Length: 254
Ligand SMILES: Nc1ncnc2c1ncn2[C@@H]1O[C@H](COP(=O)(O)OP(=O)(O)O)[C@@H](O)[C@H]1O
Ligand SMILES: [Mg+2]
Image (tube, rainbow, N blue to C red; front, top):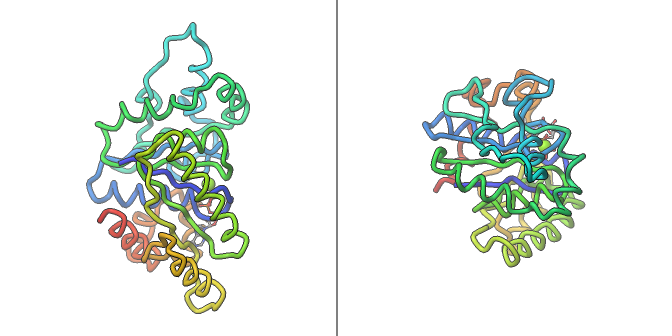
């Protein structure tokens, strides 16, 4: 199973959700790979606990496709183990920004999809974290994935952005990847007692948008989890937010 966590908006919880679902899956015995496609490297830092440049990385994977003289190394050569059992990572790199236009003009949009498909037999679940944009890397991820999870942070701007985001997914399905399905909208940092978020979520459900039943509340434990580079299941296995993550994982795992 290949899942992409996608929302063009930043700060909605993509990296947090990617890492925590992946860590939960690994903890439950699944062989898991996280692919970080955001040049800001948040998911990589969260999983590795280091802020320096990590090599080999996904930037180098893409860069090598630009030179026909080099023999391309398989994507498996870019995988790092993490401190967590069964949880591996292909880290990101700021270089992604510099090579994006070249990758685009040389039509490398299917490179990641082909590489991830050949890696899939080694993993039960692959999670792809994306940058806050609809760019070359996001499109590469959407073409590579079978399912898409959309974090949503319950504000009115996000709601408007949600419709264009769903259009982008539909267009990608039609033009590139008929296997892609929207697995669901994840309501993150939900405040069930505040009236605006509650109404927003009800309206989305009323419109038939695929809002998942499980919601995630807001808690300072998330920042601590980032700071300590420990996913919630390892930092605070009995915390309310961790339990909500478990429920979410169960819901999407059927
Ligand atoms: N459930 C949550 N409760 C509290 N803070 C959260 C929660 N989810 C995410 N955050 C915080 O919000 C910020 C953005 O989250 P992040 O996962 O980096 O979003 P994105 O990848 O979409 O930019 C981070 O500082 C993170 O710690
Ligand atoms: Mg992020």
